[in-house]
Image (cartoon, rainbow, N blue to C red):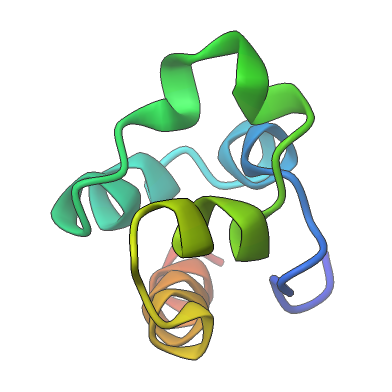
Amino acid sequence: MKKIDKDMTIGDVVDNYPHATEVLSGFGMHCFSCPMSRMETIEEASAVHGLEVEEVLSKLNIEKSEEE
């Protein structure tokens, strides 16, 4: 799969990279188990939680590369 980007939904990321839940939890984002995760993008969730989307993406992509 391609690099995780800000327009991907949380649900898609977690479906394809189960360890992403650890990264998201580390940011205080526990929304991966919420029904909204199917519609909310990484960018939207980052904004809601007051996080810099680029920092979240960086950590998610580091974890993704270690999973592959």
